[in-house]
Structure formats: structure tokens, C-alpha cells
Length: 490
Image (tube, rainbow, N blue to C red; front, side, top):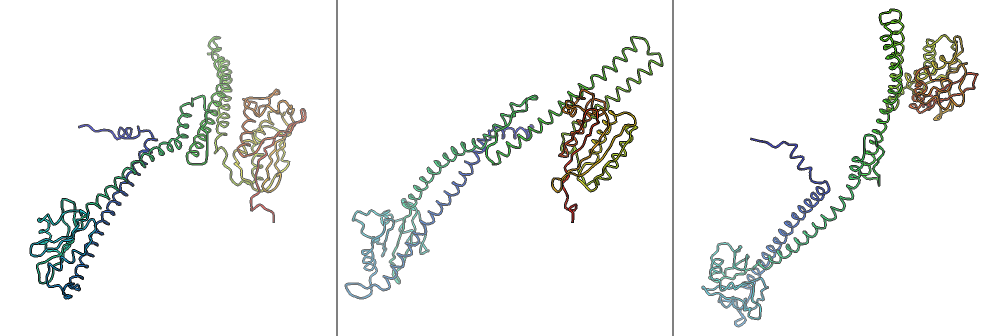
């Protein structure tokens, strides 16, 4: 016994193009509605035919009863004593409609209305003795029978004390044929409407799905190294929102790819040198035969360890730069700015033997990521240590700029080193660019100030430089910190 996997059935179902599935469901739904409407209309029309026939039967029976009860013989001016005379006179005065047959039966004799004036009537009921006898002998005063001319609604009245009977028969075959003709017209109209619905559905579905096809075509054109294609956005409906979402996804993928590519390129660029140095030292030991010399081996291991430390530092910096492009790189929270600056100054003193000075402290609270701000400030302090001599002066401070929604916190680090030239000032914040004077941020790979700029940018701020060659430099983090409601002066 074999079974068909569910996935195969799903694949078969989804192999039909979406455009045709939409058209199919529209046509099917419309067809079901039209079918239900047609069935309802036909049933209502047939009900009206039967209701009208019943009303005609009841009306004729009431008229005959009234005539039999109140009518008089015109020759005697007295009530009718002969049933045949009554039936003949009554039938002679009747003008039946085209669907009615009026009969009188007296002692087996069938009397009918004279319809010789060009009105053939619906059916020669008088000649159908079997049907007449079935109606005559029926126990019910009215009912429904079948005839060669179609269904017939009948009613009868017996004259009191006599065997005579009056019969009214209404044939509904013609009305039912009219109903069938109406329904045939409705059917052709419904089929034409379905055809138009399918045509317009096909065209409209094509318009609606056009952006989806563009999304598919763009997705097919996208290559690993080409993420520049975008889907045109038209209008403001759900499909245009899909195109916008798809484009935003491509932007995120492109940004992630660029970050990954830069990380790989940067890592390959910066790690190549220490790896080459380490391999060179090890090969030198092997070629010179100094691997057994404790002094040479210790010196080589010291150099290798130094290069490994530098590699680790480079990798850490590259990871920070890669994370800086993530939305959760900084996690702001309310921070006491005075305590933040004191913590920065306390940690900075461990970076080198310098004269550390706190020149200004901004008091209050600000929404910042204290770890990232501390990391950036210590990077600036490390840069200052690198470019000053032992005992040199480094000043750290913070102050408020602006007010209200434009309030900013400025955290500055000032050294008395050689300063930065105007040419270097434009380059030192770029990755792996140490400047002509070797300014790098930490004397390493040239990533220190790039990390500072990334942290400032993630806070919505900037890093600034104020320097005169030969007179030191001032690096500052300029971070926006709008005034909170509870900080508003009273």
C-alpha cells in the first residue's frame, strides 16, 4: 500500500499560477452566487404560478357558490330547480382565461363553456373522461393532477341534494414554460456575466500581481555581489507596502553584506602583517638553528606574544566596528553625568603616568549608554597618553551645551602633545588611517578613533577635534541629551 506525501499534493495545488487561482476563486464564487440566486428566483416564480392558480380556483368556486345560492332562472324568475339548467346558464355567461377550463357534470353528462370563437383553451378536458372522472370522484374538494398539458390545479362544488358538480381546472403548463424561458434567459445572462467577470478578474489580478512579479524579477536578478536592484514602489496599497518591505529587507541585507565584507577585508588587511611577522621569526629560528638557544627562543616568544596581543586587539576592534552598525549597539538609560565622568577619570589614570586633571563636571542626568561612552572616552584618553610624554598634562571635563530639546553633553579630553595637522584631522577618524604623524587612537591598527566616531554616531552625536600643531589637541564627544520633563527648572 502506497501513500502520496502531503507535500506532493500541496505542490500540485500551488503549481497553478496565482493569477489563475484568483480568477478561478472569483469565478467560482460568482457562479455559486448566481446559481443560488437562479434557484431562488425559479422557486419563487413557480410558487407565484401555483399561488395564482390556487387563487383563481378559489375565486371561481366562490362565484359559482354565490350564483347557485342567489341566482334565479330568468324564464321563471324563481330559484333554479334543475341542475342542468343552472350549470348551462352559468357556463354560458363565463369567459375563462386562457389557462382555465370550466365544466359542469350532471348525471354523467359533461357540460363545458363554448370556446369556439378562436380560443382553443389550454386543454380539451371534457374529452379526457378519465381525468374528469378522477376529479369528479375525488374525496377532496380541490387538488393537483397531471395531464398531457402539464400540471392542473382543480376545484369542484357539488350542488346540494343533486349529483351535479361544477369543476374549475387551471392549467399551469404555459406559466411554467414562461418561467423556464425566463430562467434560460437568466442562465445565458449569468454565463455572459461569468465570462466578463473572468476577463476583468484576469486583468485586475494581473495589475494587482504586477508588483509581486517585479519582486520576483528583482529577486532573480540579485546576485551575491550585486544588491543594488530595488522594486519600484507605486501607490500606498498592500502590494506597495510589500514592495517597500522587500526593499527595506534588501537594504538590511546589503548593509549586513557590506559590514561582513568590510570586516573580512579589514581582518585580512590587518592580520596579514602580524601573521607574517610571527611566521618570519619562527622560520628564522629554524634556519639559524637557534631553536635550542634559551635566550633566542625567549626573545622570539616575546615578539610572537606581542604580535598575538596586537592581533587580539585588532580582532576586538574589528568586532566593535562590526557591532556598531547594529541597532542594539548602544542601549541608553538614565545616567548621572557627574558619576560617569568621575568613573572615566578614575579608569583613565591607569592608562599612563600623566598629570590627570578634572577641569569641569556637568551635573544632571542624561539618557546614554554608560559603557559605550566610557569606552569612547577612554579611547580618547589612551590616544592622549600615546601622544604625550611621561608627566604630561591631560585634562578631562564635561559640560552642557544648549537647552531643552537641543541640550547636548560635551565630554572632552585635552592633551599637551604635538597636536594634529589640518590634513590629519580629515583622515584620522577613518578606518586604518593613522595620519601622517601616526595618530591612530592607540598606536595600533588605526581603529581607535573610528570606534569613538561610531559610538558617538550611534548616540546621534559626533566627535570633534580642536587642535593647533605644537599646542596639543582637544577631542570631544558631542552627544544630544534632550532635557527631560523632571529636569525642567522651576
